Image 1 (spheres, rainbow, N blue to C red):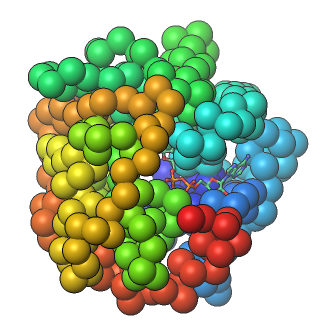
Image 2 (cartoon, rainbow, N blue to C red):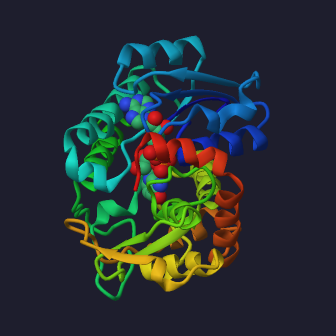
Length: 328
Ligand code: NAD
């Protein structure tokens, strides 16, 4: 494994992953295919634009001919698919593009991987495919899929197609399902950068519903480490859940940010709940820990502190994105 096609590598997790891999494996080559939708940002890659081991290509994962061409031209042996429409709120308004990119795009990549006999295909998925939990219990890899939003339904559908390519054609696939990521370079429509940047601007910090929805937070660096392990050591056809046992309510996260920014609770505003809002996600990462020896580097306390500091220091990065997307 030496020549990787990373898709969606100008987005939040993908760009962190590209940096992680170039640092850790200086002899690997990475072709980074990204459509640069509203969520993709070429400036996430500014510091590696002259790196001879990294080639950026603007294009669509649904374009089979392009994917085939890149695989041939760069002697690609592995595909890692991060490219997706990723925001639940947008999926409620425009589900079609989620099915197109997340399902048909995945199918196109799988087809090329099969036809061109690639060594491995890794699908980056989400814990949201499992639906919602009550107060108790955790998602394991055998929890039945029960997606509730158009976003999670499109991701679950893609996972099913990945599974079928293993079962039917014997393609060497893995699926990783991670919990909510946080860290640098996250598009400012997502909870932590949105709240931090709103707070910096003296705007309200909007919390959906009663704010008691629980997410299991994972630092993007620890996610990259997990993908690296699955890529190199994951058993053929297996799914691996990724999560660091950091369950927090949205209220807890926003209160932490309020405190860190020196604001008062008056900055918080409760707004109408998201349609179909899942109540609780929590991951059981035992398989990844015991089989592949994954250990997160960050605790939530160290990770959130570093992350909020990053947004405070990098206003020049997030402000143009926020203004362009007209985020409130
Ligand atoms: P993101 O929205 O920040 O980035 C997605 C990237 O994909 C963008 O750069 C965008 O330009 C690109 N893209 C979109 N459509 C494309 C297309 N048709 N062809 C090529 N590129 C296209 O998303 P993210 O948060 O970095 O998430 C990456 C992956 O991880 C997604 O598959 C997502 O479902 C999954 N995931 C994310 C989280 C999270 O908390 N962020 C949690 C679990 C799983």
